[in-house]
Length: 124
Image (cartoon, rainbow, N blue to C red; front, side, top):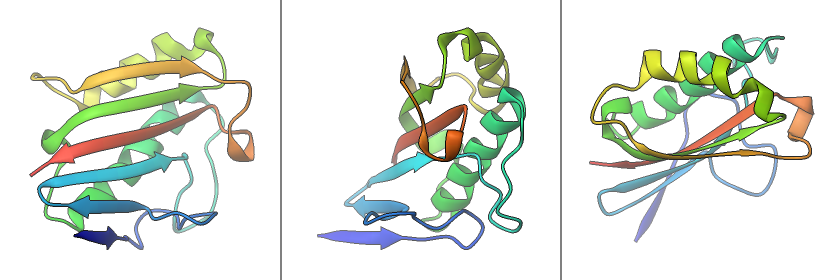
C-alpha cells in the first residue's frame, strides 16, 4: 500500500508525479528543484540552490514525521560536475554521520535551468 505525501512548504509537482510516496517504512522523495514554495523563485548560485533543494526535502519528510536523519540514500543531479565541491560543502551542513548513501551525476540539463536537483529515500 502506498500513500502520497505533499507539503505546501515545498514546490508542487510540475508533472504527473508526487512530491513523495510512502510505502511501509520507506519514503521516496521525488527530485527537488531549488524552488522556494512561497515565492516561486530559484536562487542564482549553487550553494543557495543546494540549500533550497534540501529544505524542500525536509519539508516533505516532515509530512510523514521524518527528518533528514531518516534519509538513507540521495541522488544529486548537477548541471555541471564543476559544481560538485560547492554543492558538497552545503550538503555536509545538512547531513551528519551516519551519512546517507549517495550518487551524484552531471546531466545535460535540469528542469527550469536549475543547477541542482536532489532526490532522497528515507526509512522510518
